[in-house]
Image (cartoon, rainbow, N blue to C red; front, side):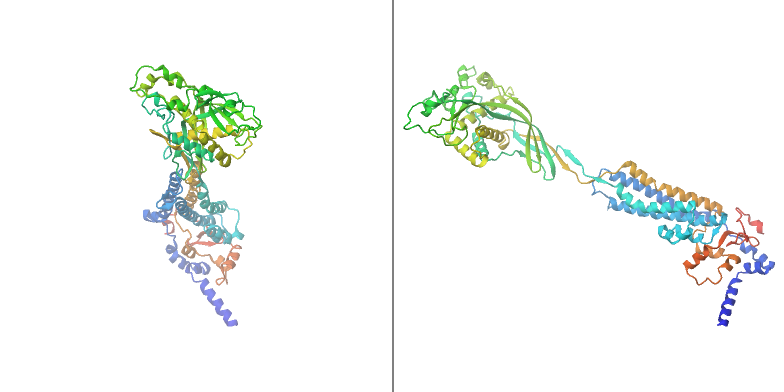
Length: 617
């Protein structure tokens, strides 16, 4: 055992005196030092080639970092306001940003490594410190993981503090790049791909005259069957849907300025003495007389069939039957025909209801029916239609009552010139619509009663509601007007553009200030590490040692430092690091040889800057 320890001790002595320069300094052999002096002179950069080798990679690092900053700004600018399916260089925007951030962090972190690796030599050269600082600075250039490894030896140092902050900041740059790339859903509207078809009441002649300009042909609307369909549809609780186009992905479609006629029955209470037209005798009579209610016969009271409709007494000579019996002229008379005036006037009818004033078909024998006297009135409505949530709604924008001029309507000479005058047909179409309503509501009692019965079952089931007749008439007239306007658009079919709005695909919404500040923030660590790197190189006479392990081995330790580390060559990094914290060193030149090494402050002189090579010759 004693021989083993002696062998180890001899081997350590051999290693310890292996360097001729160091052995000469210990033994005092000046001849050895003189012979080795020229070899010990530190090699410095010589000319442009050496300088270029030192600065080439850092300059490349700076250039790539600046390019990445510019590309990052470009990507944000390009993506702003575009849909999320945008691709740049074949990649989605988040992907290319992640790639750019990876490159930027890699090169900025590399630059910080350049600066720290050069600075550690200067730090120990100028101020000295524990030998463990070599590991501390090296670890700080390797991210937070490296810093955590040497946390126990960290001391306040401005460079280390700034490096730590930058390392933390680089970790946050990736998530921040995605956070700035926010998206939003936007509603876009255009007047394309949204149309509605309806009848233009202003320019189209919808009457049975159909541009013949012969008033004797005026019996109502040309397409009377459309009105009958509208009544039948309404009696079953349905409403005519306009003809329109609106894409399935639309949020809504709006059709503005749709003009149409709206007919209303304005009703007032009447009584059994109210006059009606007996179409069988073509005379006026009272309701009581017509229904046989004027007879005082309690043994066999008359059966009253309700509900019933009659032409009002003022309609004598103007009923549908009178218009149907008009004799057509042998030729078109261009002169004014005053006899036509008596066929034009206000359209009124009488509605006979049950004793409770509803649409019930039963009335007790000892009860009297209720009577309503109704007048048709027409307005011209301009409406907005909005389609949303798979249904369309109609909103009246303006409603103007039409004051029908019966003198003008009955002027055959005026309508003879109507085509050439580009006449406004609204009044004539409104009057023809009223005539058709009167024919369907009054001229056919069986049809009217069937409508009422269907409506009570399917459309409105409150048989005892006194307002039911008014609601019934409103529903019938309204839907029939819709059919005329939308259901079967007449010639010319008038298509109007609407406004279609849809939720656009998610779009990038990037804050300009945020992405400029984010991208340019990379300049802060860039400028910092470049400044530290340049200052460090100036302090080391332009010699770049960096993280070179060979440089550490070449410089080596002075005998005093080696002596403190005797017996630790087989120790691990943690043991060596702990020991190194206890040894204070400086980086300097050996006083006699000029060899640069780490040693005790008393052993070494400061490294002389810009030394002339002749100083040691």
